[in-house]
Picture (cartoon, rainbow, N blue to C red):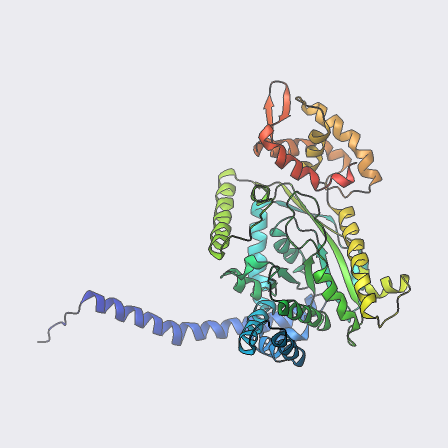
Length: 468
């Protein structure tokens, strides 16, 4: 008669964990990889007919291979040699740094994640927050951009959601590789960004070698015709209006015009606006110092907390909690056409290349300012900013909104509501501002809460240039 064998609990636990790990590694993980690779191949075949522009050939190469190829290029090796001669560090240290830079700057791309998983996640999250409106759809001229041109989407930077918004909208036609800030270096954000074809930029990296590597990377992206998305302001707006333009990224991109296989660079202006930005109060609170001192853990946990808070509020209220979000598209700006209209002939000298950066950036920013959508909150905020102190009834606010219409028409402002929807828009703006504590309602009507003045001015600033 056989007898049972008694084992310590800790040994049973260890053996169970080892068995589960072995099953995962040798059975489940290989089966999952085979399944996902098959789905990826089938999706790529489907995308060849579905997308308006084909995916760049470079994305067929694995990300790790592209990192190593970039780091081994002769111009990168020469940049390291020059940096060593300038005393920026030893060759071993700088070679390690370059690999680190290349790993952050090289976008990966996983079609199944970008066009399926990421798309569904982005759509679900955006719908939790907003009623998304395409205030001004892409003009027909965008469809006529030649296949051999490199496309760069340029937007105003209102929120960290800008990237998600534009990726979600454009994913039905093409992929876009976005530049993310240092906040994206934290795991798992870095992995998610690279899976979605984006890359991470260090805006405050002190080593001069980094700027050379960044310039090479952006020129290479233009050469391989990988569509890009950038924000010329270099960071989120702190007061609601468009910030002063940073010309670094633009200069690196424009320098690619001298590459033999770059036929044209086409910039597409994109304008965002929101009734409420999730991080607006944090931006106002950190207006001076920004978030540079925050740790990676702060970035991860604050983002996670924000997502959970949004889901909780959405489930509790049963409706979108942040009002409207709107996107507008401007006319594409072809660099070949711009150079021709300004009597500039390629190839250009170094001084000439530097001199065209600011005028091109200014023209794009002017286009963006002209097409920033006017939303209910920005309309009502303008009325209360420009009105005398005291309470106003709904009828007073509506009359003031009617008086603003000629100025908006003269500025050719992009509105997400028609004249026949003005009353509904005013009521929506009042409700949202009341809910955020910007306005107070009493027997006499609505008035501004003194503690909400800064937020009111922030909301007003997004479209103030259209309502003067």
